[in-house]
Amino acid sequence: MLTPQQQADARRYMGYPMLGDTSPDDRSDVAYAQVTSGRFQTLAHRLNTLRDEEEQIVANYLITLAGLESGISRAAENLDTDKAAVWQRNRSEVADRTRLYNQWRRQLCGLLGITPGPSLGNGTARLVRS
Image 1 (cartoon, rainbow, N blue to C red):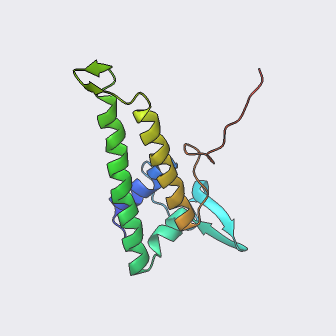
Image 2 (image 1 turned 180 degrees about the vertical axis):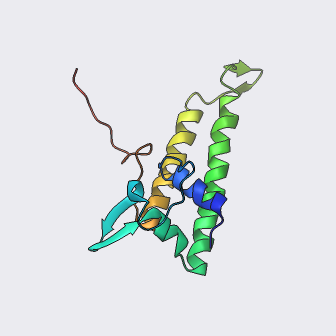
Image 3 (image 1 turned 135 degrees about the horizontal axis):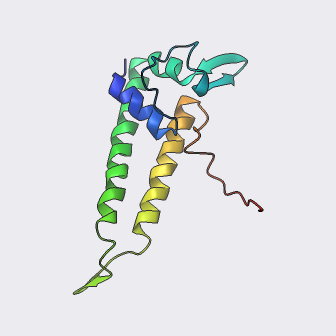
């Protein structure tokens, strides 16, 4: 079974908010619920019922996502430098890394069969008139 930390990381990477002091279960995890093939599924249920080989795949995704997330932070450290001797920063590095990170987050959602959460969205742009 995934550790509580791995489950929290999976929820966060998938775009869902923190649980606070509540424990997710198949009935209380309504915020993460969706209907799949006529059956009520929750993210908590999915994470708690993975087969051993599926857990390893999810754990590998979590390791990759942690690396991608830290890469965005490391790239942000160079935003103050435009040119240094022969080195020149990639102006789109943070955006490129963020796009790749979000792509992997959506792939984790797809792997688990759960719709991306509110903070991740569906990856499409919307125009809003004011």
